[in-house]
Image (cartoon, rainbow over all chains, first blue to last red; front, side, top):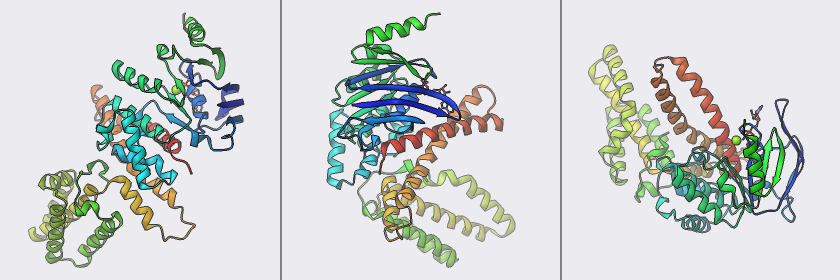
Length: 222
Length: 197
Ligand SMILES: Nc1ncnc2c1ncn2[C@@H]1O[C@H](COP(=O)(O)OP(=O)(O)O)[C@@H](O)[C@H]1O
Ligand SMILES: [Mg+2]
């Protein structure tokens, strides 16, 4: 699906990611690691918010030459920073404007994504008046309405309570799209296909969730 | 801009094209200063009142729009009263009230996205070297940042009050600026991630 070839990221002369080479084909990929290890920087490479200082990030053919941004959606930790417009329906329309769809097609896509997550009742609400859980669902809907092939989520459940976390993850589990999830909630990754453990800007462990998470937990003992 | 004060309704004012509303607002504001005098203010006042009625907006919406400006209006009134007389002070304040309500009439009946689209369609006839998409993006960014700064200020003030520092300008400004820069960074990244050309 997506391949990283010897990717390094440097910022202000500081090496943040060093020589990452990995090919991700699995539908569910988790990313774990301590604060400041480089998870967000890595995640932002997936859709080009972050550009590699050297190396290459590319989707598999036949989409290889198309923009990463077109095919990879990104959900941030804080939906307040992701939601642009004050009304739910106009926020969902935001990204679609670039696709130059007809007004009817835009409307149909918005209705479809709202229905898919049982959010139709929020269509005409002010985004800043929604609860944290509702905001994160709208942020997710705003990304999925673009119909990406892959969606990357950077600690999307950190600000949610237990109930909203569960609801959000149920929605994620049901997605057909490829999912890359950065999370400190290790139990969310239990049935993932593959988990990467990042430390000091490199992948230190890569494999099935049980093995990688166990190694990570062991490394945190002091 | 009072971006989160849109009032849902389906009135002729809501349906009017944003470009038309913005143009009408500009004409009205200019006229108020060109034709100085009570007659112009009265005519404009009646027009704005009619607009409110047509849009189905009530006195409550007028009050909400005027409230943030109340102290400034009071100060203007006091200064004019001191320098001139009560009639002229009343005129100046009445003109401001009409201006604010006229602007409110546009923001209360126009969605942010329509506003941005309005600017885009007004730019349609601009020469090709004008970066239209970028201007529209800058405007939506600006509109997005107003409520953002407001919530940031509220949060920082509250946090500093808990420490007894809410009267210390530096204790408010430093975290406010840091937070706005940090959020601004992420909001621009999100806008970049959600749009492409
Ligand atoms: N602009 C920057 N300049 C220098 N260092 C940075 C910059 N941005 C992030 N970093 C550093 O890069 C490291 C990785 O950051 P990040 O990818 O956000 O980690 P994580 O998401 O795992 O917490 C951190 O140590 C952080 O301090
Ligand atoms: Mg992070």
